[in-house]
Length: 236
Image (cartoon, rainbow, N blue to C red; front, side):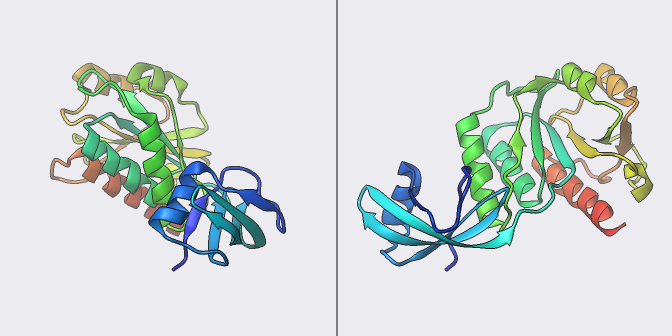
């Protein structure tokens, strides 16, 4: 089995490194690896094959053998999501990562009931989803921001793709032309207020679009919207 672990620091071939406490626990107690076993470590610069050269209960040392994969360009798709309860939020973080999002921006709107996010837990979910989905770049997760401040920060180089339950418009490839980044905006479970919708639709960078005739839960809307944007962006 090919074990992949995220290693944020720089990796140099033919050097040795002691593993972190968390990685040591995983290697020794969860996977029960032995000396001589191989592990792949990755970060935005690429992926390296390594070998365990020393292993005890609380100390594991690896040697980085060779680079087996080069880092590639980052996705230009971002997700701005109004905070939801713990289980659907975990699901959103996991699925958005699997689908290759570059950045996740948690938002508070008028009807957002949840005001906090456990960042340690969120980062753990994101890194595990990156390891599992054979990617190199865990998405960045921003500080929580109020909707009005988020809208002020959108500049002309970014396209704001608003998944609007009231829209009947569909997304087209020309909607993305010359945009350095594409930011998908998904509202709270009770949708945005009338005033918030006006502010969103008044933004010069906005493109409202319809996701479904049905009313979707936030986590379903996230999967659907990212898949749609990825498809149009990749194949046109």
